[in-house]
Length: 140
Length: 304
Ligand SMILES: [Zn+2]
Image: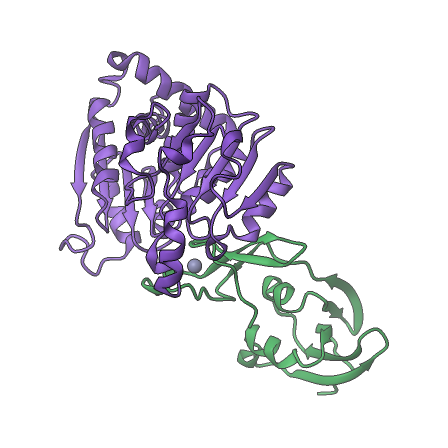
């Protein structure tokens, strides 16, 4: 795979340096059959250093997960070797099974098949709270 | 299906409608005595809370309905090993409305998402207890006639006491409310609750001294200061007496002060205060039943 030339696929750009691997696993890119490249510590005028992920296939990315983990990232959709769309991230209103509630009194601790749902309750401060117990999500 | 899990599930207008119905029930009980005939309330209590359960059950009986009671839902074979979701689906087949108490936070929400009948949260751990807040609001409304321009003192455990947080949320919807937040350092109100007050454009003061603002208060809401909230016994012993309400401490209070407490009390209001006409905490219990009646009528679509 020539990492510079993707014909039809996705480039996740402007990822904060060091977060590339985390995003790779959160988006389950390891399960893909197509070529995927993680490029770390690329020099960036804007960010100093950044990570880039290139996916050589048209897949449906979970923009909610990406928006939560890497709100600074951009997603370039490449078609026929050309940039066809550039998407900016927004913080998702709701996250399902991305972060997990750690409150021992929460119903999710005894009923393991329940989805872990978090709602955005304060956009400015990026506060997410558990839909069940309202505990604040802790950054990990 | 409409459920009430959190006091925030009810708009200000809806709360006021429920209060209007409750006050009508008080005036004309006969008019409501058969409203729920043929309806069944299931009380699913996964932890014991006899007074809350009896309040719901009395409410349904006074509306002419029937009650299916699972007072030991947590240990009974009917739910052993069964998920909250499944229990909610099963009970929906028998009952028209469910009141649920559960030790785990968020369990009633899980029930509500799975039930095909309305679910009322009757307390989920220390999390939400919306019908307690409804009881508090009816008490304030009956005693004061309005919610605007009141100075509301909240005393005791303001950190973990969720009834206090819910009441603040409900009262913050009104104009001119001043909150006086009285607690020891260890049990101060969380900052997100203070931010909510500020966001509503309302004022609050914080104090450690129950007496400091006593002459200004229209409402004094007492809560229990629990021993287990303190790191060491000395701190608890040092502080507990300063938050016990006695007739002496009421000397400077307004003659129409309304003294409230979610009950059960341990010793935070001395028994000598009970004779004071300003003591409203037993009326609050009765008001809780009326609000549960009005809420069930609303959720069953029978309020008119
Ligand atoms: Zn939770």
